[in-house]
Length: 257
Image (cartoon, rainbow, N blue to C red; front, side, top):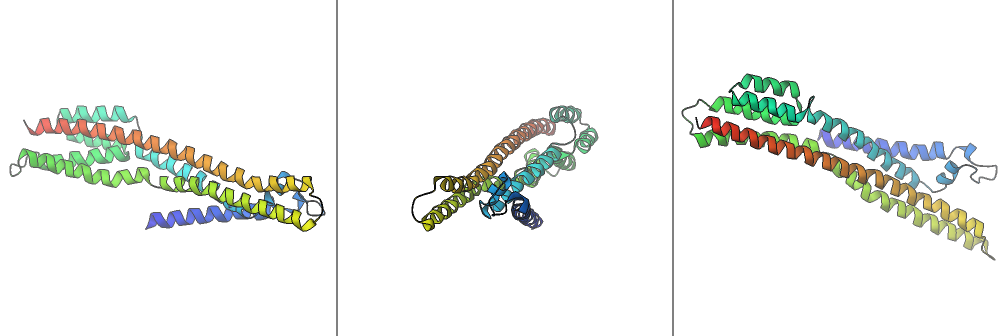
């Protein structure tokens, strides 16, 4: 629920800021001459219509989630080198020093550390329990791992779908703005009657194409960001899976002693 509220607030604010920039900054009187014709590129972009403001809002949305994902994934990776952390934990578990393993998890923090801590804590509680057989002990440990993974993995993938959605709808809004701009341009020329003013037609088309450019820009930023963070998450999940496999094997060998 909190996540949805956060997303609604971010997207709403981004759209409000984008439309505000279009209306009050791009549409400043200084960007137009006395006859209302644009004398600055920002004025020309303003004539692209309110869809330009929506596209600015979508671009700001994408940029906002780039920073949000970068901070979240960086926090999820923990404070130190992941591979060095895993080596320390494996070494401590091999010696049976669970306190050192848990201390390393507390120092490292992050998703992998949380998962390993859950596994070690559960193993400590069942290792010397004679009422539970060996297979049941490892089943309990695996259940603790699965529970921790189910809590941590969604945090890594959260909000990536928003980037994907922005990439999809940005191009559509851009094409919609271009289509509306072209309709307006040809309608204005048709109202003139007589010969077609090529310069006015060119201006109208250029205004319309700013929507296409805005839509493509927002889509490019979103697609690159989405692919970048998806790859980053996939690589980290692979490290988590490999580390958990090694720890499972080590704990299994200890419980059989």
